[in-house]
Image 1: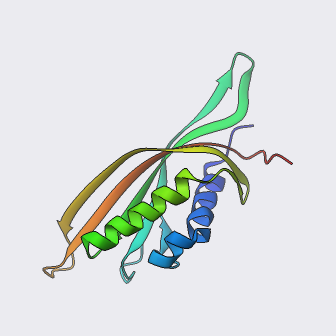
Image 2 (image 1 turned 180 degrees about the vertical axis):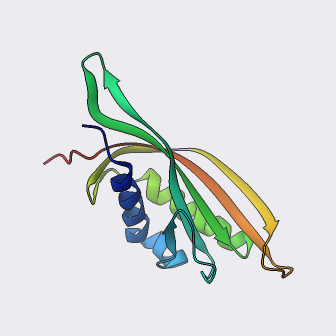
Length: 143
């Protein structure tokens, strides 16, 4: 059975929302794919960018490796750094079930930091971190 990417996205969202450090910084502003235009900062947007079922000679083994992109948006460098640190900690220290997915291991494979102008016509800027994480997971929850 291959793992379902919807289950993984729901699990990542639940993991981030349940983490005290992340919640203290972004509250409930954690979104899959896109954030509403009215979203207050800081906030997180995440989505799966790729998935590969792990296989052995006998076929699929019930695990998949997915690459997840987590974008942190903030109005200041300090807020971006704090939110990025909290997301890294939440992902790196979790092993277990969330929803219908069992996360075996998460590795942060890259972080890109940037500053850009907002597209709303103001002179304000975004402070953004783009975190790439590799997640090995299964939708077969061990008992």
